[in-house]
Length: 358
Image (tube, rainbow, N blue to C red; front, side, top):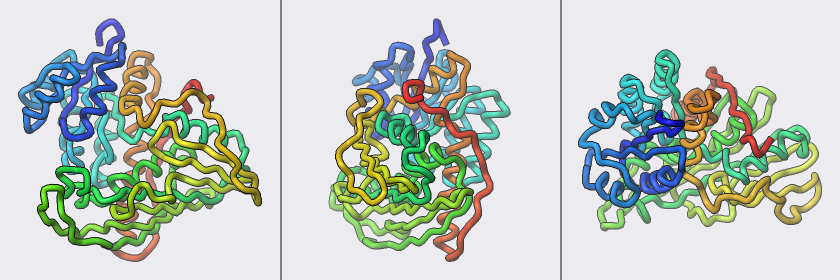
């Protein structure tokens, strides 16, 4: 760090990297040092758009002493190995989700970061959005009373309709790819969960890419999961790669003794938040705590980590919480395979609300 400017570099320059890089390049307190990719032409394209140098390899990037935080935007299967390599090189890391594909690997990363005195962060960070923080404050202040049930919907459409390389998404399945968003929001609000039961099936096994290349999937593309918290609260989570994301079943709905709260999106910071007392109908959107960012501000979680590094405070999207979410995913997979509920054992310290949402 130089004069409170945090140096950041990106590993992995696929589809999502452009959104991250544009945000990071715009922050005054962040110096986007550069990026690398197995396909250097992708890094060159991103560099031309957003600035920063092209590192010829991961090793070259990690050798740059001006890089404080590495943003790991590689494919799901590479997250563990790349994050571990960065931590072992003495770099703080912010990873795309999920942190790893097994709980054992996720916990190893969290333990390694702690042992090395390094920060480990992970997407999703979308609980930091204006709409999400507004919903959380309503719940935190008791407007719903005791929350006993919530419905979370992830109808994420057919990845092959827009992504040039859909197979890795189908290999891990919708729960690992996008179920992590509502799970991270819910564990932020309610803390660590305690039990999971899940059912999954393949609805649409034979797919065709945008280049008319057929492929076959074996991992369930429709998953129904129930997650239970220590106080008995139950969440029903639906995730799939079949129903279009313009479905009327979206977002998260929280149900308490006194009323219900609807958050129209777990990702968009300008989502609608609505409240109704028990037995009444929803009647218009609540005002958000501040003017929202339109859509998703992809750099917000990394910016929070960079600020926390300078201010010597905890960052919010932690590796410990991400590891707990991976344990939920792994438990759901075991439950799908064996038909039984699975207890959870990991824990973490939930993040604090944003300063403007207290």
